[in-house]
Image (cartoon, rainbow, N blue to C red; front, side, top):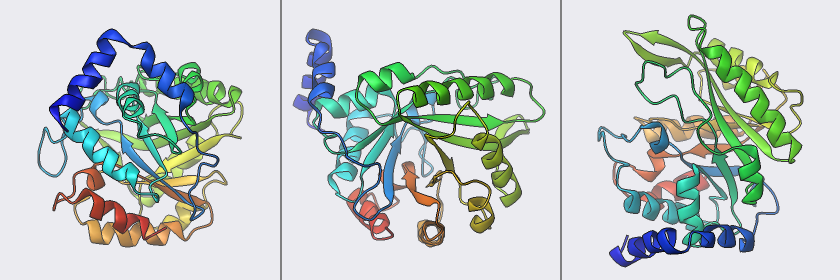
Length: 290
């Protein structure tokens, strides 16, 4: 990103912070959460607020905000990428850059479970709330909901997630829930990606809140996605995560998208920071799946 653009963003935040709300008010909103293909493709960029800056073997790949914003703009310029998921700071930068017109926008809600922290499973809601998401004219909120059967600090996150679902539903907004069955392995919190674990997490997440009318599930690729899809009638999007073999992953995504309630993809790091650094090419390759 050009230095003058970064300087302009900083200057606006310093002298005219009301410009953010003004940009949100005049933003052209998407008329549907899915794109022309009937599926959605949401680029995810909420990792940094949880202190997760690494990808592709580089522990600080996402540390340069100007570079991240450049990559996000490349992704969002593709008509097949119909939305973005991020924390308020990134969404506000994109608003000021005029990059969110006509896009579906999800605000990330709980980022308190910092990557590698002793309390990581107790993922407090430190990001956007339903009121803020509605005020900005965004389309929904996303929660990370990890479930560790051996750590009773899981319970507050489950309760907070249920309250967030209800609050979003009260505004008619989508709640995108990303559940995992997780456990500590050598002191590190690890997600169980077996079919059985993903099915169980989907079943638990589907029952959170007093209504599921506006709830979507954001789920990882598992060995048997037919069983995962059968676990709930809720709309499901497939997440990306840290991908090592992008070609094999694209094949798995294509198979998942053929299932009736798999409504799209929500992918971030593997497309924003591809091995060949061709962001536009990585986005095109995924759009072709839709």
